[in-house]
Image 1: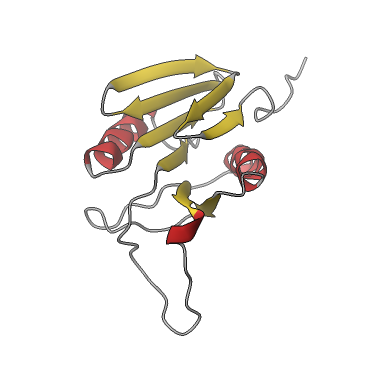
Image 2 (image 1 turned 60 degrees about the vertical axis):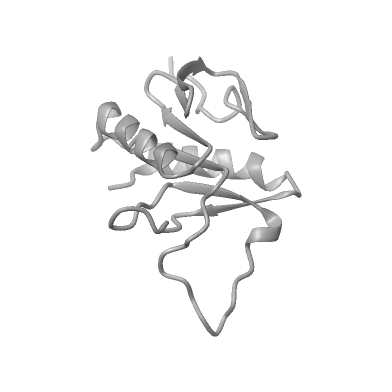
Length: 139
């Protein structure tokens, strides 16, 4: 169940993604993978997104070039990394799994996983400065 921290982190990521005119970051879009997987944010090239107000799509067929998952307090990092691997195995190029407690981002690709802490991450021409994403530390 998404929490305040989860929503805040998603919003901070979306703010940065929206400034990139070549992509369309979509929150909570169900992909046609397995029984329907729904990343927190799915990023597509702008040309691939053509909504039709008369015909909605319940399970989007295209694969995002980037999916972002923010770990909620009710989820384990292990289950989220398994979801990231499943998304990559199903054709998503990159998955960022964001864990706010440790200010960590796991980047999953076909080549494996890489770990980052509060830094600028760029994949597929898409970048987010995670030093600006995480809330300020409480003393």
